[in-house]
Image (cartoon, rainbow, N blue to C red):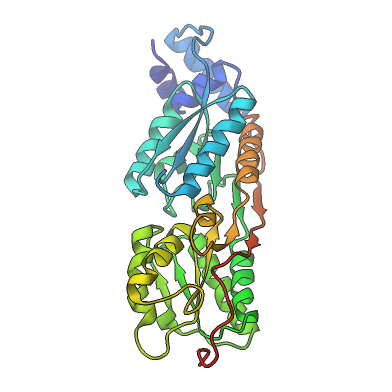
Amino acid sequence: MTLTQVAREAGVSVSTVSRYLRGQLKVHDTTAQKIDHAVRETGYRVDAPAREDFIALIVPELGNPFYASLAEACTTLAAEAGVSVVVAVSGRRHRRESTLSAQLTAASNVGGLIYAGMNRTNDELQRAVADGFPVVVLDEEIDLGPDATVPTVTVDNYGGAYQATSYLATMGHRRIAHVSGPPALLTSQERLRGYRDALAAHGLEVDEDLVLHGPYTEQYGASVLPYLTRGTAAPTAVFVGSDIVAVGILSAAELHGLRIPEDLSVVGCDGIQLGQWLRPQLTTLAQPIHELARTALDTLRTAAEGPQEPVRTVLPLQLVVRGSVAAPRPGATH
């Protein structure tokens, strides 16, 4: 008899059966009775666990230094607590995020999942959460429907964007562009909302031609400069929703005859270490990587103790002022 047969008989997932039988999961009384009954009916023999438990971490990619730093922080902090972490990379693909979620939450020796996705939905994750599997959503919030809520650890994207845009306005910039991420992501939406509200607070109008959406890649950053610099009403500053996109902008600026910050001031978001080595150094909204990882691990540990009310933790972003921002040149503010 296998765990699959027990799970089928009880009407729950294999992972739920496995962790319940090993004393790692508290379930509702009715679920416990169903599993106990299924064990008796199938004749399944409960053995002591033979392998160490892991927790899993799903990230969109490791080429973006933000996600690489987040994965490193999670694995390092978990190791200090004697916990092993397996890291899976989705490649930012919706289907692969779902496939990895199904595989990892069904594995008998995976005790919990920290999920950093790049899509607003994930049916397999929704099923795992509804079945009681410990999951914490990190960074990008996800919509699992009205019947499946999940603990979330994220940052104040609205407040950070408001702060960054306000900083550019107080430096004297009047035409401020925003290079945003994929429009369906809540992080993109919140940063755009903060950008809009900050402009309004400073009496500035939003020029929709200066609001661009695209992937969080260096290539995208390099490709947006022709759109920002066309015409006579080019911006003097830009708030970029990702440092890696800002790296692309800085890298391609010289090819388009732009000096940074003399011709274009740039503020990024994430606080990746690479920004310190650029010339000029990148002004950015720094994410609290260490605290994000620690909070996610602590929240997952609490979630594994049994059903409880999910919490949403929001951490602040910090504006780090460096060399990529300056006051606009006289006559350049339009």
